[in-house]
Length: 490
Image (cartoon, rainbow, N blue to C red; front, side, top):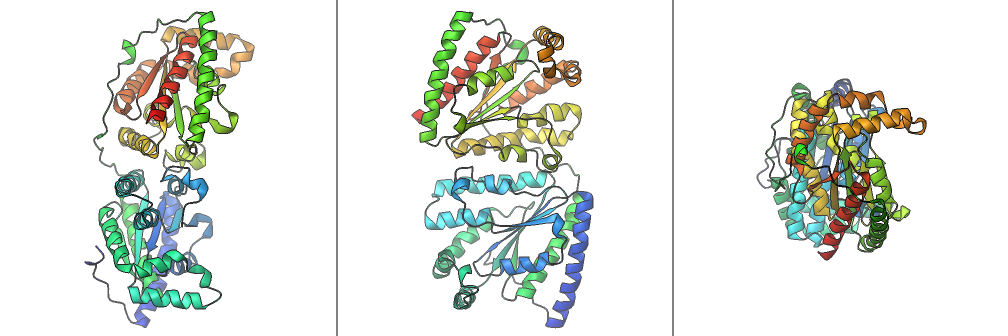
């Protein structure tokens, strides 16, 4: 791509100054429009070291309202970030609706640098390219504008800039070993960058090349392209996007109506097995911590199905320093104004730790679907987006265990009534629980579709028959233990 790029002609100084003044004014106007229309904008500035990314960024933001944008300089991942999935630190920083986030450096720098240095092997590199394309597509599909700039300069120009920076005691710190390595291996870097740019140049998030030889000219190119991109995004806001076909292998699952709920376990056997299984899980927790294997356990199910008691018995076997339970309620305003998966990405465990979710990302295709909190296009699209999310976790090395906690309507009514009539349990029952019960049949249709479309080979659903809570608790422990043991064997 870089070799085929035809540079625009730099205008003379007088014309450049006039266009730049106008472009700055227009971008400031667009920021207000972004705020009013609640458009989230992610701007990526990447390219060669010393190409002027930071300088241009500094010039651009001078004309913007600082309350409604953030900038992040993304260099090498920290040790903490290295214990998270590859996309974690990028997803974590996506903007809220109506705001702009500028990335000085991005996922491009991380993966190409790793590939060039040999720390990211070819097979892993190809996986990360796919992850990046999915990430950018998902942002676009969920209403984000993603604008990507590559700052291009020649080898000799880069060498001279690095030399000038190093010679000044006030700027020498800005030159690191990577910048100098890049310049010495310019042709090799150019080859890798060119292929990366070609592979990730999607019509929903294209690359724009910036001629970086003159800083004011570079600023003008970026500013005018930003204005144009925002105008197009505002015009297309609210459009439906294509529903992609699932490409991941699925595990055949029964319908909820086909599941027997007659299983029972005697009290004496329950106590004996509970103790044995909890001891085994405790041992495995030490092993996964030592081998840095992350575990994600997701609970969904009917109200009063016994999720809380199930989670309690699971957590009792774990070292409190190595796990966290996330009770997921309705999204807070700052969560609602971002991609719906953001609040789950930000809660992912570190390697060697366990995250237990009481309710999950599947709310998108259940509650949000049935209560009209998202459009039909949103929840139809979410099946593939969720499978992609879980594939990221699997590729990262996580053990993923998903439970649907199943009871029948009579059992739910019995438990609701018990909660309502028992003072110390009344906090567990709300008007919303009764209202949701009236929609049982609609929820059953949605749950069946969810299970059929998202039970992948790498993250299958497990049904916990919970008319007998003791049986369900033991089965949950057995399932988690089996999943961890299987991963340890690998």
